[in-house]
Length: 115
Length: 109
Image 1 (spheres, rainbow over the protein chains, first blue to last red):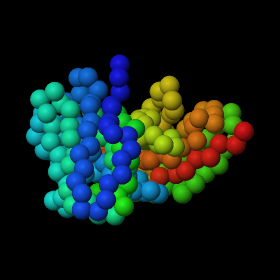
Image 2 (spheres, rainbow over the protein chains, first blue to last red):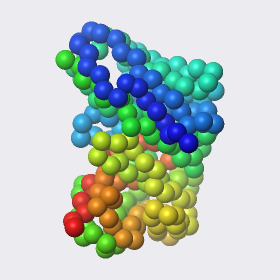
Image 3 (cartoon, chains in turn brown, blue):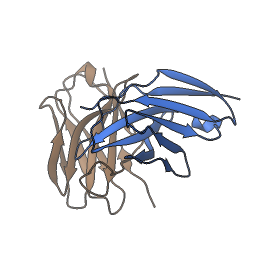
Image 4 (cartoon, chains in turn yellow, red):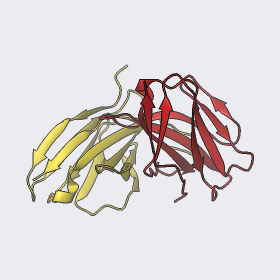
């Protein structure tokens, strides 16, 4: 079975531009979460979606938005890019809106560089 | 958010056991203890999780102290492929994973 797939794997943008990152969860997984990982730090939670509804949001500005589609794939959008948005963006899927025991499967990430 | 404390780095020889400690003195009764690891240039990978009892799986063992204020991830025979950052995470109910800085494990051949 395919794991969590993310695209693109690498991209370069300039300040002020907008970017869309895509994620396909593992088949059967209905929950998708997005994380941002800046170099040298652990991943930081951005969003969680379950059954196309936002179930959680981290401490990120409104420039960050996301959505989940009927096939459970997801997109993360970032507007008005800043240099500080340069990071690895990780998508994770799980079987359901997670209780404490649920396990997340992560993709390899999309590395965004903002110049 | 529940907090964990881990050493910044540890070193192990190949084919020897590795014990990665984690302190979580403010743990509550419903917090699960999760371990994830992140190999270079990859996303985090689930290792193991537990609530109160020790747990074993094909990757590792998790030993949880009786008072649950600390836990230890045990890799029984470290290989070069186990070199990674290991994250100990408390999961209180329906909340996202909150990653700290983890422990960077180096494995020496």
